[in-house]
Amino acid sequence: MKEFATSIIQTLRHRGFQAYLVGGCVRDLLLRRAPKDYDVATDATPQQVMEIFPETYAVGAQFGVVLVPAPEQAQETYAAGASAENSSKGHAIEVATFRSDIGYSDGRHPDEVRFTRDPREDVARRDFTINGMLLDPLSGQTSGQTLGEVLDFVGGRRDLEAGIIRAIGDPERRFDEDKLRMLRAVRFAARFEYVIEPATFAAIRKLADQIQVVSRERVRDELTRMLTEAHGKRAFLLLDESGLLKHILPEISTMKGVAQPPEFHPEGDVFVHTLLLLENLPQPCPLTLAWGALLHDVGKPATFRVAPDRIRFDNHVDVGVKIAEEICRRLRFSNDETEQILALVDNHMRFGHVSRMKESTLKKFLRMPKFDEHLALHRADSLASHRNLSTYEFIQKKRAEIPAEKMRPAPLVTGGDLIAAGHAPGPKFREILNAVEDAQLEGQLPSREAALEFVRREFPV
Image (tube, rainbow, N blue to C red; front, side, top):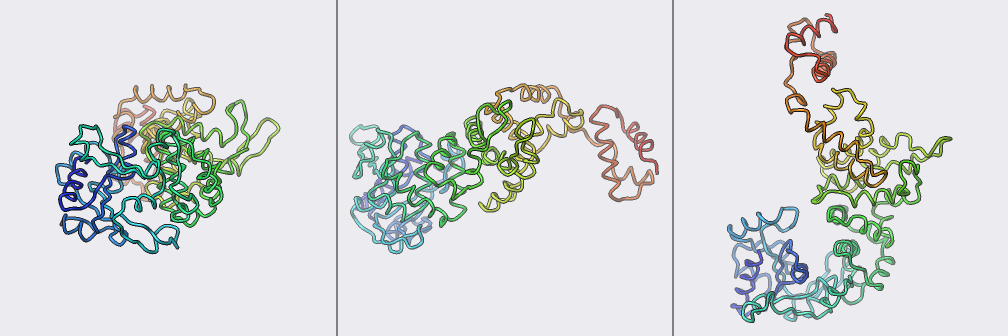
């Protein structure tokens, strides 16, 4: 997609306009990382861009933003190297007109946009210095430079080299313009293992309660990125330190200081355990696994009690499922995502019983939908506490030993068979069929005839 973005810049230049790569792609190229997408900034107005590129989508023309779709060949190349998750813009280049923004009454969108021909004005209204650099890729083609000339009006290159997240200009003004930038500062600091510049961090702490004006979907998406970019622990420590956590996920904030029995959790309280668990998630990490990991012990603060023998969390799984469901609805996860997140919370304690499970119960457990996520959560949970992976290894051994046809065998008895045997359709059907399946999974019913005999013996008409 870089080649396509460069061709857009070249076309705009030939028409007499200024045009550069801008934002995160410049930052990533300087860091020698593969950009997730490419953005172009130009002094051409949206109307002029749409006239030059007839297939353009005017997704935000009132703010100077249009999308130029990539040709089929570029789309195929992009799809081979990046998933849809990696870019919200799909197979298109965002082309934005240089602008200055006036007023942000809703804490997200500018009240008025004024187009400009000066790239310095455009950069001045962006979020962080490391995202405020421009790159001329065409100069690299003529000069032999690897990337091209970098236009840095805000000290972004200096902060990139020093590992600093710094708001452009007045931090409070930048965050007043778009409250979500507070979460983005945390995410970038965690992802790149940078520090947030003191004045920028002070502004976040001062304005943290205003994060609640941001739409729940935008908050959810930023948190999901934090959880799935392999730096969840650092991200949530920064969320807590900045004061943001108690406003967006108070249920996680309340985990702090909730002690656990040291014989099972030598690492510390529920908050410490949860953040350690995030460090041990696989990469790449599915969204549902990341959120299931974050919420797996969310029921513990409400169920904490000190019993004569040790600290206990009675029914923390059931309570946790209810709390997790409220969080999922509040953040507007899809029904499918919510179902899997809740399943992870609901089943994470069952791993402690696998060595004592009947064969039928174990097989049903192992064939749960998306069981790999359940197993990954168990492994991370173990590494974040006692570090004993014997159960994980036992399950891996069982999965390797049990063939698919034994794990999920074809039914030996059907509802039609039960009717033919004289049973009336009704709730009893499910009980009988479950009993037959359990006996089959236990290896007690080698044939259809044996199964029918089992029904006649155990469930006489």
